[in-house]
Length: 187
Image (cartoon, rainbow, N blue to C red):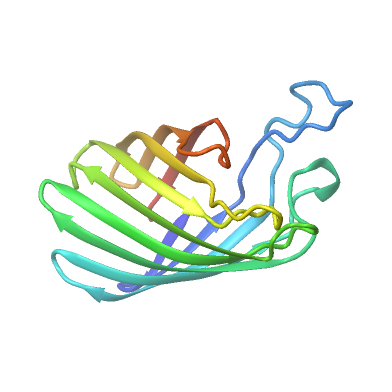
């Protein structure tokens, strides 16, 4: 959930729901449980008709149940430099960032990069294609997991966007496939 607090400053909050199953749990035991909470600030320091440059930084707070696989043990943080360029009829996005992991036994420092195209840039129904890679969290592996995502964004109302999509791996380091769903609320 994002909220604009000024023309160039947003606050974002995310508390994802997801299944995380232990070996003895039934397949539906934790569906809908909350994971860790993310709080972010995004500052758009360049904003023209065609170009937007922003920095987003935030923290992941350990609000999920670590013992059930619904979160990490400690507080983490991240920072992203985000560029968007309007190339009518599409919007091109590039993100370069860093995440400090808080999972014991995993690599602590995780840089990442993504690029995406959303087309059309405005409208009730838009499509997106994205490619992303991040440093491998396994300290024994050096290959960055890489994925491709695609999906649709539906502007349901002036204050609500709903999106669905799919993610597939581009190399063997990434998960085979993931279903994506989300919402953006504006007020």
